[in-house]
Image (tube, rainbow, N blue to C red; front, side, top):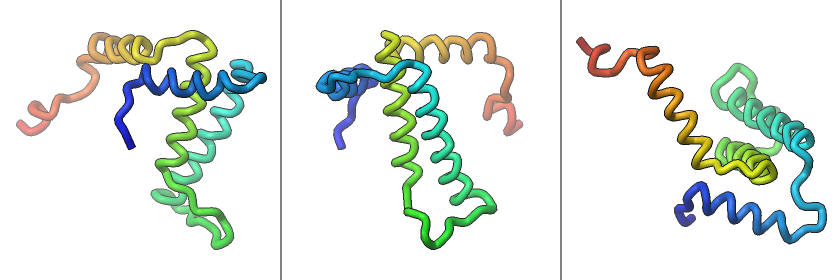
Length: 112
């Protein structure tokens, strides 16, 4: 697999979706789909780290595949709303680095 920037991933998804007449689903439909995909990811996490093992007849899915599904739908939602995910990420990191800067104990302080 090649490394891609978030911008490149957004462009690749847009190119893929743009080849279909239907285009992007509505934001509400994508939220429903995202909820479904997050549920599938939660199920995988529960099978791997929780108390609920897979049934023998259940299809084997990887955490990587389920996270990829969530990422794809998130990119679709962002693209449909003209949201640059690089900018969205910068905004959230600024929030964590300013508002939440004293919320957690830095490793060097925890080791003292």
